[in-house]
Image 1 (cartoon, helix red, strand yellow):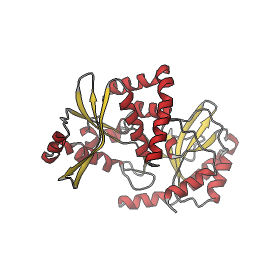
Image 2 (cartoon, rainbow, N blue to C red):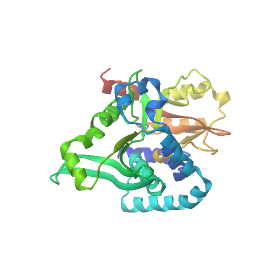
Image 3 (cartoon, rainbow, N blue to C red):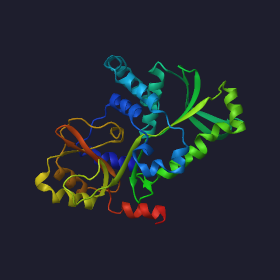
Image 4 (cartoon, rainbow, N blue to C red):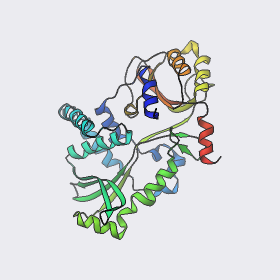
Length: 318
């Protein structure tokens, strides 16, 4: 049984968060990049080298898609677009879903013309040198732009290192790869020739990486000490039992496509039901959850297996 199947089976027994494709689109265009949310990450060499999309460009995108008239007109189109893509090319990866949202954005925003998506670069038609996420024309200045985009979620293991919940990804490595490989790719002479064959002259490049960074939960507190946190299953049990008299929050299990936009005012399950389900299941993979107050999402976290932290440190060689 694959990790995806195990996770889906467990989540199916819980009360799930809602997946709103339009809200996810707004979150995708409006969220800040990960390094901007954490000073220790923003100051790393790779983060400072990357050409992050200017805030003014992000604001213009968000303002357009936030208009009520635009939402009324385009929201049904987005649903049809995603449905057709999923029928033709089924894919449950969050990164693919994120790219499809951006493909729709580039196709519908009046400032952009989508030229290529996932453009493969092959030497002699065989050897793959790389791939460009998006090539678009920015119409206000008539510039041809290469965009590398990613959506990422990392848990803090040490002061320096942030690791993906599945232990297969690391923030510093991802930033370095974007800075050292993915963006400089277009400067390779062979790639320049391939781009010329496509009639492309890249004028500038942008990096985009929204997401969230989750810090360890202080289980001695009555409320989460961070808006985004992670905790072991045993730690979550201690946290919930220590504040039993104050358990007014509802809890939602979040499928991957609900990891993006905040949840609204949804009736969640009790902490006791969530805890009971996890303790009685074969809990081997991290679970993303949202705490819901009367006004909507109050905080979000990952519950991880008790051996997750040790496994993460072993991956780091700590």
